[in-house]
Each structure stands twice: as structure tokens, then as C-alpha cells.
Amino acid sequence: MPLSRDNAAPLQQQLADVLRHEIDAGAYEPSGKLPSEAALGARFGVSRVTVRLALARLAEAGVVERKQGKGTYAAGKQVRHGLDQLRSFHESLLAQGLRAEMRLLSQALVALPQAMAELAEAGQGQCLLLQRLHLVDGEPIALGRNYLPPGLAAMPAEKIARQPAYALLAELTGLPVARAELAIRLALADGAVAQALGVGEGSAVLLMERRSYFADGRCCDCSAFYIRPERYAFVLRTSFAPGG
Image (cartoon, rainbow, N blue to C red; front, side, top):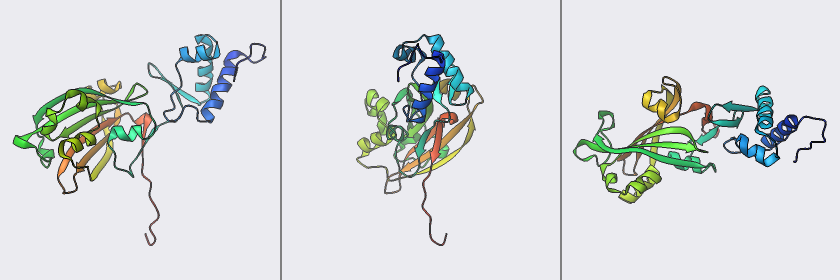
């Protein structure tokens, strides 16, 4: 919908009306992120000042949320992580059609934490610790720490950086992950988590702890995901059980 300089309404109001219509129509699904000020200015042939004023109007009306250095989002838009299917964290983002990516922050063979002693194939008390940053639309959304069998350390670094944990496990063992146990709770971001996610130290984050198992009962993955809560929601779909 083009803007008209002959219209009695100011350009910023016209632009705000167009963007509100597009948001209501779901044009910015699934992440809810609007284009940058520069991109909107180029699209509609207006200055960044006009774009900024239009976005300010929408923010005042509660239609969008603006985050310094992060961009502008349709208010209330969240990534919705379904819990009714077993997928790796990265695959759950891709399944929603999101522009998701992973960045490998570190990988190292470390002493196996006592709490993860059941991890399969943890030879000589070691495991592979992967720390990977998960991003949506270029914005950090979660820091993942995967404790995995040490045999994965022999894989090429590029493969470790780009493949989800479940795909790595299947390639190493030839076995699919059969089930997982998840626990989700509130946690406070320590210095490392805060730096990775771009939040303040001590900020509240969602912590999803996951233990994954092969069909024979062996534990093959102990993971923790520190998630920015303002852009993330877990969804569990259930059916009514007669007599329940």
C-alpha cells in the first residue's frame, strides 16, 4: 500500500496505519520482527525520521515493542516451542519456519559432572561439552550447553558447529534418540550466560534441562538451554482423557 504525499494525514501516520495492517495480517510471522528503519524507509520512500515517528506511534499504542540494538517486534510475538514432539532445540526452531542459526562458542573434552554420570560411553570419566549460541533473525535467543559422548570429539569441527545434537548422535552411533526428559524452570543469568544472550547479569532466564535416551535406555545427551523469556514460550498440546 503506497503512501500519498497528497493525503491530508501525515506520512508517519500513513506509515503507522500500513504497518499496523500488515502486523494484523500476519505479514511478519513467525518471529514478529519488523524490517529495520533503513529498510522501511527505502521501501516506502520516506526518511528514517518518518519511520522512527511511525514506529513510536505504534509503540505508544502497544502494537510494537522496540528494543535498543535489537530491533522492532510485533507486541507479544514469541517463538513457540512445541513439547509434543521430540526434536533437537535447533530443529524445533527450523520447524516453525524461523531463520535460525547456531554458532559454536566452544568445544572441549571435560570431566564428566557427577550429576551426569549416566551419560552413555563416557569413557574414563570424560564427555564432550559443546557450547552453542542459538539465534533467530540474527538475535541471540538461547545458549545451549550439551554434554555428549566423548566419541563425538573426533568429528570435524564444522560438522559439530552446524549439526543439531541429535543428528550428531545418530551419525556417531547409527541410533536415533528415542525419548527425552525435560525440566523447565526459572534461573538467573550468570556472567557467561548474560554476555552470550546480551542481557544483564542476574536477569531472569528460562532454563530447559534435557536428558535424552536411546531405545535401549542408555543416556546419550545431558543438556541445558538458557533462554531469553520475552521471546520464547513452551507449548504442550494435550487431549481430554475420559474419566480423568
